[in-house]
Image (cartoon, helix red, strand yellow):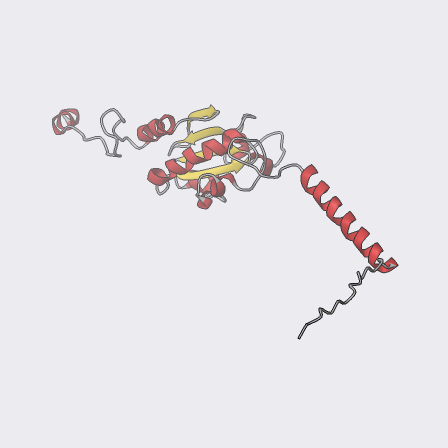
Length: 203
């Protein structure tokens, strides 16, 4: 028995796009092109440690210490309690301030319980011609970052602008709290009074 192969004629089915399909395809293509152009033409909104772009509170983002802002104790209260106060004038969109926020956070570790840490965003200072000595604006000199350290008697013992090292500010704190200098002790230890010299001074 011989089998005959049955041949079926193949028809190619082609449909022409109808008006609705053609319009929807064109709209979809147009949306895709515009989206790509917008994505490529949009400038980067990412900020970083080394640029002057705003990306939020610098103490929370770069120093990992959101407890610094807002300050726990205002300047008026620190002066009333006769506590040393560290004022740090800063801007959230300054790379120098971003770097310095790390130093301020490190300083808060040993001194945060005995001194008032008061970061002041200069954008929040009210514009006045004159300030009282109990207001942070009284100490601001127009530069950021600026560090002002006020002792227990309310006297300014340190006032410098720019990025400072931990050691520069730590030395002043050590002096205020009568601690051993770093050359004698890296740990925070009080100076020991010599009993003999104390007895001689009493006589």
